[in-house]
Image 1: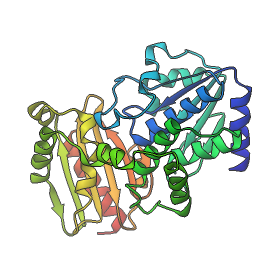
Image 2: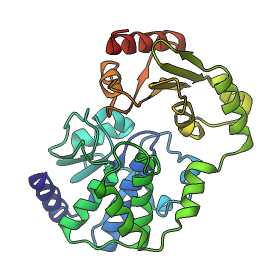
Image 3: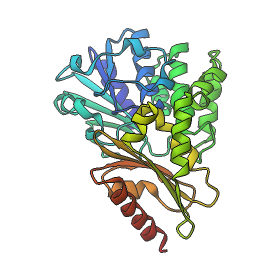
Image 4: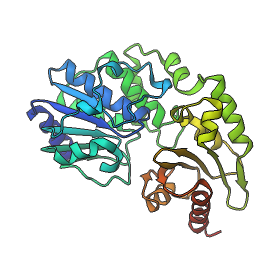
Length: 323
């Protein structure tokens, strides 16, 4: 990891400019990590641009993030960057439209914390033991000798708090708390951020949640719970797909289940979120379906129907548990 940090810092120092990109439909860690380094580059005289693939839309609960107005549309992203840096991407495919630029980049720095990362960069700053990609960005800033500022701190805190589930997940470590303490020193609006991320939802979304929880299925033998969101649900309730990001966190509260699943119909297929509180490795399950993630949190996109995808997941859980 020390060598990787040295190589990453050296690449940034040597580049005349850097092009930053996170994965499609970015979550708090992807957006927060990318924008944090964008702020750092701007503050320390390193020209940079930041973007992600179409659909170039940010979920409403991330609207408070400083720097959203500084992002570049994917159409204007350089075709062959001198140095391209990716955030929270386990594979080039997760970059969507920007995967082409990654393939043409003179140098590609991958910053990620997923165990399933394919190490597709020329430099891979990948640590599966890191709680969030934001943790690695902070380490990189330290290696560069770049001081933080408040905008950077807000972005890093967003990545940290989302990927640790408000410091409740098993990946919460002493390093996480130490970083949170450092970031809080920048007079962060912690209560406001928490409300935006976890507590504030439109009434229409709450109605959709009620419908989805009402159809949830619990397999007591497998200790497996699942529900799904259809395109018809989104249309009926006038809810966007991005708004449903936190649904899995409600489903995973089921006391009788050790593995939780939410399936969502999307333009690119059925998007699956998996969570576990047991010895079942949902990261391995997701990888078997072409996705990835961590032991306790993972996901993938299926080209099959919701019913067929759910049946395949049940079978995978059954095999994993020997049930």
